[in-house]
Amino acid sequence: MIKLLRASWAYLSLYLPVVLMGVLALGTYWLVRSTPQLLASAPASPLRHEADYFMHKFSVKLFDEVGRLKSEVVGTDARHYPDSDTLEIDSVRIRSIDEANRLTTASARRAVTNGDATEVQLFGDARVVREPGADKGGPPETRSEFRGEFLHAFLNTGRITSHLPVELIRGKDRIRADTLDFDDHEHVLQLKGRVRGTLSPGVTQ
Image: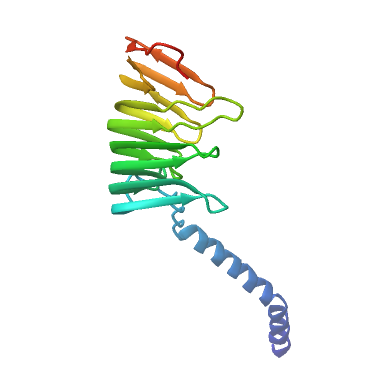
């Protein structure tokens, strides 16, 4: 009897680790099946068009890498929207100086600019003035002024567009049209719709 018990104990001792391992594996499998799955990480919610900061009676200046003034934006109130990196400004005035040192000014009751103020949409009593400069090897340029209820100005490239009626004052010439697409660098002016104006005698620069 004692020999039988000893043999049984020896047999059990030999296979006990294997049995325990099996029980542990089954227990782990049952736990995994019984535990609710963790919720998948929720995707990052898209940015809403809400202002993340405000400014009141402000002036912002932007400089290039050598410290030269590129543009200055002045307004009564402004709201920045991070989703589009745009600045909405009330009673805006903008000064921009391009690489050829030509000055462009813009003003309106409201404006929306991009992050570096090189592109601006002007709403309400919009006005853009391109001051005269001197082209290398060419005659002095003529002062150009654009007026309308909406103007879209690309200050770095000198392009101004509008899908609404505008008035162009260039020297002593005055032209009105229903739409405008003006490229100062390419010296191309496109006026569409009802075009009418007054041209001064002689050649206009």
